[in-house]
Length: 271
Length: 257
Image 1 (cartoon, rainbow over the protein chains, first blue to last red):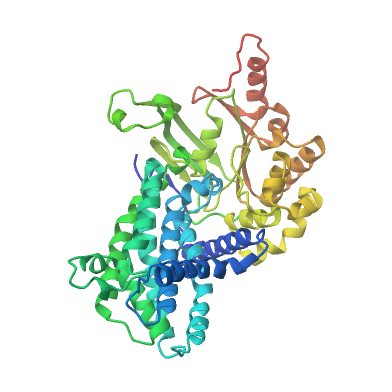
Image 2 (cartoon, rainbow over the protein chains, first blue to last red; image 1 turned 120 degrees about the horizontal axis):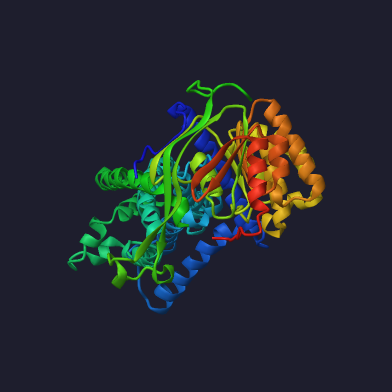
């Protein structure tokens, strides 16, 4: 099937992008409202869920099993790890199924289907961004200072993370339209990603074990360490790992966008 | 509403030798590793078998045919919800609007949110879409249910919200698939009036129907589809006379494919 088998009048890329971004933002806000409006705690669940996870890790790993992350400020270390890896895994899972969960929109005319993974990843980022102030609350509770000098650096790192997740989301969503096993595979893989990323353990603890490559090859690990630096420790992160993560983001987008675009032409036939 | 599109043509949509098939999976539609690549694991079901067609801007066209004739697929092809397996479709409007009964509605949204979303997808900015909500709510005529989640609404109510939004979104190119069949008599009359108003303002309308009345009331042209091919294309009254003749034939078996 030729990709030009259906053509619409071309509007300017700026106009088209502005309109699509407006629609994406509108649907992200609607999705956020719909998610929390029927919960009695409402938007407080954005904070409750990662706090509960952190408490489980502190109680089980630190208090019961005596396992240390290798970092002095274990609670802060855990909390930042949980927030960012959770956003990544939730984003990847929902992006993978986003064409299926948006079947109603897939069957509407005039919808640019690239917006589904964009919205899915953005939804997980809304929860993440709303949770960031809790890191600072935790720092103050622990008697540490809020790193005002480096906080602004979180924005470019968030952008790299968003693009990385989006690239992967396009690839996975395209694959899942045709082969539904992909969703199940992603669910298992994201659990692995949670444990194989330095979420609750520090890279220093595996030095000399021969498994250092687990951190070196993982672009999410680079982002996670950089976010800990700027949001908790007040340190400017190393540029090398962030460039590595950016290269992954560009590579995945270069593969994912054209693949997803091709699949999206006949997406409605497979849902 | 009637300004020409960026490509400045008097055509709304063109179909050039359009064919469309769907894949039917064998083995109950469940793909298994052991069946991959095996002969006969997939079957092609051809729905559109070579259609050449041009629709003028600011015109109203009715598409009729028995169930399974390919009417809905034809509408979906015209607005890009799906693409041809062979041939080409050129839509000359940037924001076609499709209203169809089988099309799902995002269940978590309220009627209000659904209407705003539909208006935005038809090309309205969000603030403009919000400003039209009172008119849309009044047109839909479902009272406070308009502010309830769509999943709590009946099929007829969802259709009312969708139709009301489309009528107030300055939609230039409207494709309506069987939607007029479900409303009550009063709402149907309201819809016909609204469609006539949109047509007078320069919109292009294409709709499928099993009922001759709206086709005769609204359309200059009708196209009769059978087996994925055009059986007859001409003035609405002529085509409907011929179609109603076959529809009344007791030997014609009407089936859902």
